Image 1 (tube, one colour):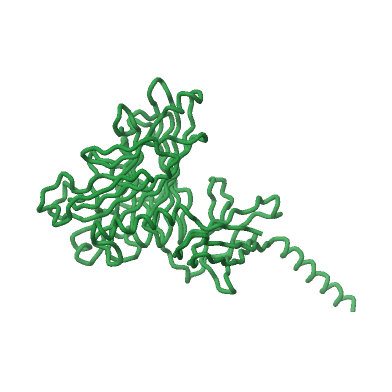
Image 2 (cartoon, rainbow, N blue to C red):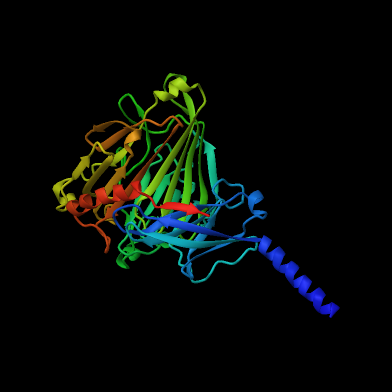
Amino acid sequence: MKRTTVTMFVMLLFHVVASAQMKTLEVTVSNEWKEDKVDEPVVVKLPEAKKLGFEVKSATVKCKGKDVPCQLDDMDGDLRPDEVFFLTDIKDKDTKTFEVKLSAKEEKAKKDVETRIYTALQLRDKQDKHPDVLRVEAPGKTDLFNDIYMHGITIESDVVGYRIYFDYRQNIDLYGKKFRRIELPKTQFYTSEEQLKEGYGVDVLWAGEAIGCGTLKDWKKGQPENWTEVGLRGQCVVTTGPLRTVVEMYDIGVKGEDDLTYDMRQRYTLCAGHRDMQVEVTFTPSMGKKPFEKKFFCTGVQKVGATADAKVQNGHKPQGMLKKDGLAASWGCDYPDMGKKQLWAPEAVGLAVYVPKEFINTTKEDDLNYLYVLQPDKNYSLNYYVSFCADKEEKGYHTAKEWFASLDDWKDNVSHPVKVKVE
């Protein structure tokens, strides 16, 4: 009898200890927008470890008893998770409830979770192994452009791919593809002739001296300027998983006008199922508040094919728009790499940026670009969204009319994210 009592006590104690190492959150997600949402990002901020009583090592998400793929993300680099991230489809004016279980026990990722995101920051080495790293930084005058494989940090969803050049331009480059799948581990942005024949995608944009698609530039003397006066330049992987990637480009000791210096950090977020990428920029002035309040930056889209002849344009007449509500877009066709015309044919693409009106100082159109001149808010930050399509996509847009017609809904969609309530 005593042995039975002791056994029951031990089992009860084990249950209490185990329960203390787990917590279940009820998460309510509401879509207050007038349209259905597909692959809508949901971010659940985690309580601090002190409040939980343990450090979170794993998480699971369920909706009506069914598993929902998720990832656990460390967003501040302290090796402790801060967020649970997952995607959901949700009808207009609808609400869904999720059960998020947090545990102090590490669990291996489920094999049936499809990887829909790729992230790479790799070094170029003599053995052609291209080792993955999480951070690269160097003095601003040091040229590492050819020492980083793919010339900069690279991210891909199952829809599109982007890379951010590690140099004074810091241009956003674009990878378009026919099929919705992950390709960059194989093509590495430099698709071979054999891969092209097999249906793989390719780099689809040559920016040259233009703004490209949503690249952030300095604004000096009434025109875009590259980031040449920088004390230290760096890139890093913040977090990546099967569903979301977050990476950063940062510049320390940027020299502006009138002896103004500041630090700048650009955070890029790309989610599975998405062609659009969010850009969040924060500035830290090194000198007083007043000088920086007069500092301006710019972004926008280039006029694709504006300098190409009719043969290269291939029936895709350059078209574009620059609206006061923060939506700029263009459509056209041109060579994606002027040095590889024999390998890569002209590509027709649509470009777009959406900038919330509170960050717009003015608009400007020149021979190469549709531009927004930007002014950070009182917290020294600004944000905007970048998107593009390639004519080569099977499930995409193939004319300027189709592309432009889709953009108002896109702007409204990103302007009305779902509401997340945690209990």
